[in-house]
Image (cartoon, rainbow, N blue to C red):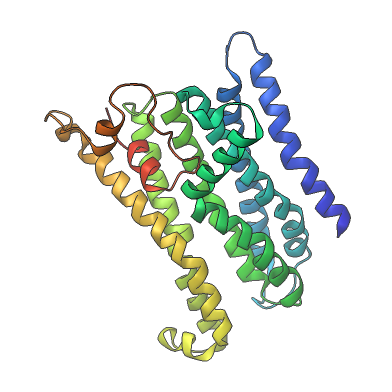
Length: 300
């Protein structure tokens, strides 16, 4: 167990640092430290592909939805360090955005670093909380409390990561001001569809599968399963619904942007506070918050 945890603790940060150094060392790219850090956040996509592949193998191999599969606990232990790493990676993206914008928090020194950390935690509170819960609650529950039961459900939940690559690609397209391209629109539509299927419909599907297994009508399943299963499902689904609502808003802006762009826009509150001085606050590091999702899906 400790060996697998150690492997994950080396793999994800190591891949982040290696990709950052490789991108910076290619002369033709001329990428700065900040560019390399943001592009290196695509380590999330690699983890998503690995998790989805593991989930597919587990779900397709389980003839009985309750039976054990060796890959389930193994991948959980390997992947749990990723959530710790990702908190750090998101902060590095946020901090370099502050430096590009010239914010005081990005200056060197412990006081400015503490200020940047506090600002980052305020902006990314839900995402950081999600990652902390994954490590402190979901990890011990999935590895120890389950006692090897329900691996089919765990495999299906791994496949929720299929929506992550489109989120990462959207962040990169925004970084390089490609909101006007067809790729950005196609990626926005793909993000909407994959997020809805693999994150929003995930829990109703799990209830449906268990109902078929136990010969229980779908609408009776929440009344028949243990209460803590319902509480856990509700707590995990709540942020997914919130993020999906933000993606829907961004998609609406994306696909109605052509007509809006022809009408003059009134200056926003942020524009009034930061009038063309290049010091507007940076967008959050994740792909879901309202200040990032809407611009990311808006055409200019």
